[in-house]
Length: 292
Length: 259
Image (cartoon, rainbow over all chains, first blue to last red; front, side):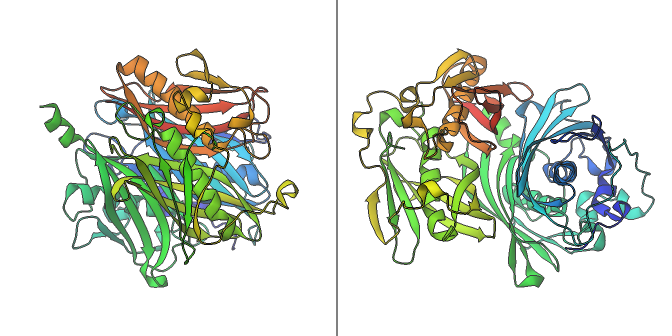
């Protein structure tokens, strides 16, 4: 494993523009951080709501960093992550606009760290709840250099045009010929500091494939009224080469909620299975028609 | 595990599956198997699967995600298990669920942590040769005269808060609260909130559960809280299980729907 690069080179973090600060004096065995996500227009849908793919990207970023603080002088990689969105924040004003990611390490074991992330809007209404597990590894060049406690870092607004693009453009997504199939071309900005595909890149591809399947059309765009409401993701192997392809299949439904299984594979690396995900995709349109 | 009629099947190719024979005491108000009993099925079969996959080491459940579909009444719930990754320190197992062998009933994803085989089970031999066998010799299933959840003897202090004493029937080989009983706590504390806030009968159908510390000091207490707010016929919960010393033993989220 190679060392941590310059954090400013992490394209996904620049796209998300979440500022993170550590709570406490930086000596806690179970670190606690808070992330402030302002919600740049490019990252939000027409209602001002963050899609689940980018929500997971934020969770992976702050949860991974906070888990890493618990692992120092070693560092971590995310092995699996779950998220569940609050039903009350899927429509209406709750869940729109700026979000707060309250992040706390729950357990630091010999080889793994478990961390929870609670997401609220700025008035404190619960938007999503997540927990994730990270494996502890020893980086070849040491862990990233942090000043403890970590002060709130306000990122400069990126000036490159790519950062003003929609998620599908930023993450280089292309729709397949069938609904539920999404391809991602790997670019440097989509990698993490270790040079492998950022977990958030995988989550965006997975989320897009799941929504496309339930929308019933090949698309990388927003799918109004169709939202991934919960997700379990297991990172099985790193994405290195690409193209990376996410394929979603339906396992059944409960009312207007579809149980969708998604495999994300690295075609350029012998079609290796990178991520296995199980998602619930809710169709608010079906909900309305049922109510009628 | 002794409360439920679980069976395992190991194929000649090493493929592992199994069944849960259901009765009226193991189902949700809609007739589908309760999340509590499904969690026991996939945890037990996943454990069996892990024995071969982790050999010569041992494995214990680190986390579990379960999604259930509304199957309605059935006689038997079938699961087929697949090892999706065997790393040095973790094992990822996927469990497909079927009603009466063919109708999709949901799925589960489990992580097992691989550890050196503990001394206290060094001499324990578990039969992993091909064949079909009962997983609970001396089962009380025939004597189950009340709902499974009642058999666990949960004590509700208030809506969404339940405690459980450590007794042999709810503990694992080291005397800690059995992992699948954590799932029962998640199921029932979430459902109790659902009944109170949504009104009427409810079902807990999805769960993401992370195990943190062994629950060795009883009683253990589960506290379910609402994420956001109840919304029409749905409720999302966060559930923490703590031991008698206040240590966090598990953390989970769940989804409840009114039926």
